[in-house]
Image (tube, helix red, strand yellow):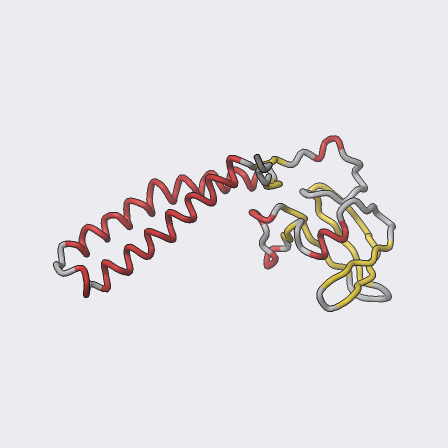
Amino acid sequence: MAEEKTYPITAEGKVKLEQELEDLKMNKRPDVISRIQIARSYGDLSENSEYESAKEEQSMLESRISTVEHMIQYAEVIDNDNTDKDEITVGKKVTFKELPDEEPESYIIVGAAEADPMSGKISNDSPIANGLLGHRVGEEVTINIPAGDMKVKVLTVEPA
């Protein structure tokens, strides 16, 4: 049997997923069910746009519930206690600068479930994070990104 994919995630990220799942099941699901029941009461379902809209929303909601349940079931909570403090791993904040003389950039490397580039959290599957993983402070790293190669120098690595 195929091995299940695990989802690297911080302890904080797992708590957020669990909270999202509870909200989906306890608040959003009953709301959608109620909307479906109300729309049914309008009569002919074949020309009932409210019913179709609510059924579509229910389908997307159930899909998200299934996805979140799967991610929680196969979550691999990141524990950086046994890693070198200077090594770039999932769950750490890394600051680097593009060579020769760009401004420093900082990102927290997280699992895909927690990625939020607008708040400085990038997925371990992204080209930049993937290229940085395993490297250490002071190293110069060439990262293959869609636009070509990018050479960076790792300035700091710290717990997120």
